[in-house]
Image 1 (cartoon, helix red, strand yellow):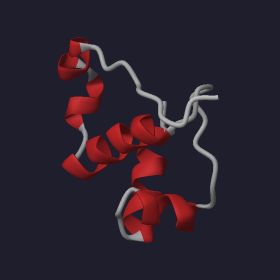
Image 2 (cartoon, helix red, strand yellow):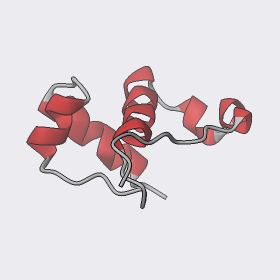
Image 3 (cartoon, one colour):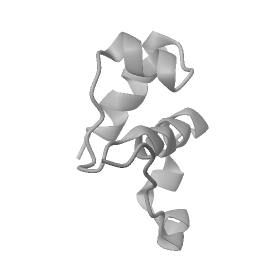
Image 4 (cartoon, helix red, strand yellow):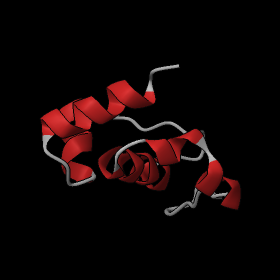
Amino acid sequence: MLDSMYAKLFSRIAQSSLMEESVEVRYCFMMLLAIADMNGDVIGTDVAIARTVNLPLATFQKCITVLMTP
């Protein structure tokens, strides 16, 4: 098992609908990519993940709500 992973980020993201979101939402998205495991899963409670990505809990929860919206 690898102790570090990486997520490929395609340049097309700069023209995606993600760019219409706030900087906080975009930051949260990028950080979730950075901490995801090899299956793309981020495991933890909202509190733990918010702490890991260095966002206040309420901000993290708002970002997740936006990211889960179709």
